[in-house]
Amino acid sequence: MSWGIDLWDQFENLDKHTQWGIDFLDRYAKFVKERLEIEQTYAKQLRNLVKKYCPKRSKDDEPRFTSCISFYSILNELNDYAGQREVVAEEMGHKVYGELMKYSQDLKCERKHHLQEGRKAQQYLDHCWKQMDSSKKKFERECKEAEKCQLLFERLDNDINATKSEVEKAKAQLYLRTHMADESKNEYAAQLQTFNREQWKHFNSAIPQIFKNLQDMDEQRTVKLGETYRSFAEVERRVVPIVSKCLEGMVSAGKAVDERKDSTIVVESFKSGFEPPGDFPFEDFSQNIQRTGSDGTIGTPKNEGGKPDPKHSMSKAKNKLWLFGKKPKAPTLEDLSHLPPEQRRKKLQQRIEELNKELQKEIDQRDALNKMKDVYEKNPQMGDPSSLQPKISETMCTMERLRSEIHKNESWLSEVEGKQSSRSDRRPSADVNHHAPHGRESPEGSYTEDPSQEHRGPPQPDPHEFDDEFDDDDPLPAIGHCKALYAFDGANEGTLVMKEDEVLYVIEEDKGDGWTRARKQTGEEGYVPSSYVDITLEKNSKGAVTYI
Image (cartoon, rainbow, N blue to C red; front, top):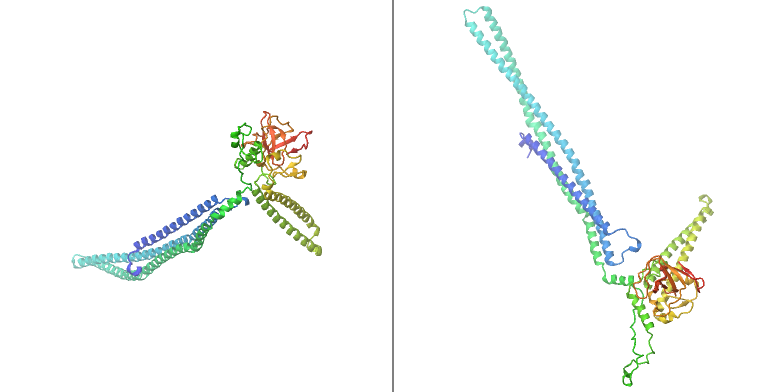
C-alpha cells in the first residue's frame, strides 16, 4: 500500500495523522521520563533506608552476633540493589529518553519539510489553474465581443441607409475583435495544456513522492518506537543477573544466622569470671539457752567446728549476694579494673594485640628509614642522611612508648590470669581480711608490701571483700578525710550514700579491695569506692597518702 497512490487526495488527513504520531512519540518519551524518575526516587529512598539502619560506627561497635552481621550484609546487598536501580534510571535516561527526545526533534523538522513541499506543489498547481482560468475567461470575453461586432457589421451591411464609412468601420472592428479572439483562443489553449501537464505531474509525481516521504517517515517512527520498547526492556534485563546476586546474598545472609554462635558470643561478652555464691550456713542462736537433760539431744551438734561466727557468715553472704545486686558505677580506669575479671582479661588481650600491631608498624617504618639512610650515605646526591634522623628518633621514641604500654598491659593481664586461676583457693574469710597486717591487701586477699603496686592506679571497686563491721559499739577514730568526686547511690547493703563534693571522715583505709570505710558528719558509716573520692590522710597516721 502506498500513500502516494491510494491517498493522493488525503493531504489534510495525512497532516493530522503525522502530527498524531509525533504526539504519541512525545507521550511515550514522557512516560519513560516519569518511569526513570520513579527509579531514581526508589533508589534514593533505598539508600536513605540503608544509611538510616547502618550508620557509621567505631571499631568497638562492629557487630559480632551472626544475626547482626547478616542484617548488615542484607543492608549492603540492598545498597547494591539500589545502585542497580540507579543504573536502570541512568540507562533509561540516556538510551531511551534521550534518544526519543532527539528523534522527536528530527521528526518534527522532517515532517515540517515534507508538508511545506506538499503545500508548495499545491500552490504551484493552483497558480497554473488560475492562469488557465484567466486565459479561458479572456478568450470567452473576446469571443463575445467578436460576436457583437459581427452582428453590428451584418446589421449595417444590410441597412440601405448606412453609409459606406460606417460599414467599413464596423468591418474593421469585426476584424480586430476576431483577431483578438483568435489570440485569446491560442493563449487559452496553451495555458490549458500547461495546466494539464502540471496537474498530471502534481498528482502522478510530486504528491506521490511527498506522500511516500511522509509514509517512510511515519514507518520509521513506528520502527523507532519498537526499538525503544525493546531497549526499555533490555535495560531491566541487563541488571537482572546482578539483582539476582544481591537477592542470593540476602538469602545467604539469612542462612548464616547461627543461634549457637550468638549464644556463645553472649557468654564471652558478659562472663564475669566470678564464682557462684555458696550455701548459707545455719546460724544457731539457741546455743546460749539453758536446756534440760531431756532436751539436750535437740540442740545442734557441737562437733561441727564450734560456735559459728554470725558476723563472718553474714559478711560472707553479703559478699556473695553482691554479684546479684547493683554494682557501683565506677569511672573507666586505665587498667580496666572497673570491669569483671573475664571481661578485663579479654579487653587487655585486645589492647595488647592492637599495641603489638602498632609496634610492628613502627618497626617496619624504622627499618625502612634506616635503609633509606644507608642509600643516602652511599649516594649523597639522592638526599641528605641527616634529614632522616629526626624521623628515626621520633620512631624510636614511639617504639619505646609502645613497648612500655605493652609491658604494662601484660603485667595487668598476668595479674588477672593469676587471680582467676587461684580465686577459689585464695579467697580469705571476712575475719582474716579484717585482721590483716599493716601491708596492703590485694582484691583477692593476698598481701603485698610493694608500694609501686599500691599506687599503680585507682583500684577496682570489688564488692566481694566487704566486712560486716558496723556492729561495733565504739566508733572508730577518723584517720583523715575525703571529698566525693562523683555521686554514689549506695544501693547495696554496707555501702554509704554520698553526693558529689560531699566531705566525709575516713575511718579505715582501702585494703586493696577498692573500697574505703568512711563516716558522714551525721555519724552514718559505710563503704565508698576509693576511685570515687579524693582521700587525704592525717600526717600523724601511718601510711598517710593522698589518692587522686
